[in-house]
Structure formats: structure tokens, C-alpha cells
Length: 251
Image (cartoon, rainbow, N blue to C red; front, side, top):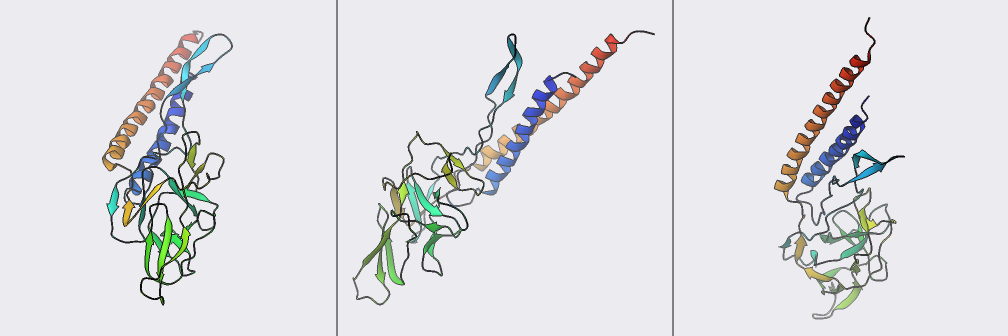
């Protein structure tokens, strides 16, 4: 059998995975601050052999890669809606998970009194602790994340600080990936320390950075490439059968 078939099969497997990525991105077009997953590119590596270089190559994929570019900032005029203007991440703790990074800022005060996003993840403070918010008449967030409230039964104008939302500006030297739960963490599964260098906007939500037209076009291209690989395997099979017939000893 022509071993080039395995090269085509490898490409088909990656194309199949890419189609799943396209579907995932399209299904999250309207999710707050969603960062689109990156499809495997076909930058390839040559396979070494004992004498010389093998002409066949395999496509490589980068597991967990995502596009970190900022989505559109949409005004909501809701004080509990936050968006990071520029680079950076909130530090959150998903329900049943470990600390992670997130750009999602559609916040609420849970029934337990802690600040959470709409997925239920707790918003953490600069001390890496949950932020508890007492009943309030008014709430505000500064650009560096300080949470100030006017308590429910307080005198008019009386305000107290209840915490500071942790943000971290991750440098290029740290590789970030998406974990299986969809949250962003470092390659080793942790987070970077809060540094409060990111700028927070209150009354805005960041939209998804998925461009649906680009994803639809990519899906069509992936389907066509998959079909080409199927035809290649069929052709390789025919060539293999033709070569085998030439080697048969005539009766």
C-alpha cells in the first residue's frame, strides 16, 4: 500500500477537527466576550528517515489555541456590566473548577452575596478571594476595578469600598490556552498574578470576536479540501492496484 495514504488520512482527521472548531465558533457568535478557537493550520514538518529526507509531510495542530483579539465594546448602561478596554483578563473561579482567566463581564450578585458572572463563576479580588457585596442602593466600578457601594440603609452619599476586581495583563512570554471547560489558563493550567494594569469600563460588554462570514467561508473551504483528500486516497488505491498487477507472474 502507498504510504502517502496515511498523509491524506492525517490531513482528513485535522480537517474533521477544524470543522468542529468552525461549528463551535459559529455557535458562540453571540456569547459575551467569547474568544474564537483557532483552526489547525497546515504548516507542516518533514519526517526524517535514515537516509535523506522523506518527501511526505504531516500537518500539525496547536491544541487549545485561540484568538485573543478584542471583540466589539457594546454600551449597556448597566453598572454591573464590565468590559476590559484593551488587553488583560478578569480572574474568576468557575463553579466546580479552579482559578481561570476570563474576559466575561456580565456580572450579578448571587443569592449568596458574592459577585459572579452570568455563568456562575465567582469574580475574584486582588487578594484572590471572592468579592462579597452587601445589599446596596447603588454600585460603581473604577477603571482599576475598585468596587464602591452605597449601602441599602446608609445615609445619602455614604459609600464604602467592598473590594477590587482582580485583573491581569498577561505578557507575550506566557502562553495561554483554553482548557476543556472553556476557560483560559496558562499552558501549565494556572493563572498569572493580578497586576491591575488593565483598564475596566463600566456600562459596557465585550462581544464575541467571531466573524460569522469568515467562519462560514472557512467551513466551505474545509469541506472542499476534505473531498480532495478523499479523491487522493481513491487515486492512490488505484495506483497501488495497478502496480500490484504489473508484479504478478503471468500464467
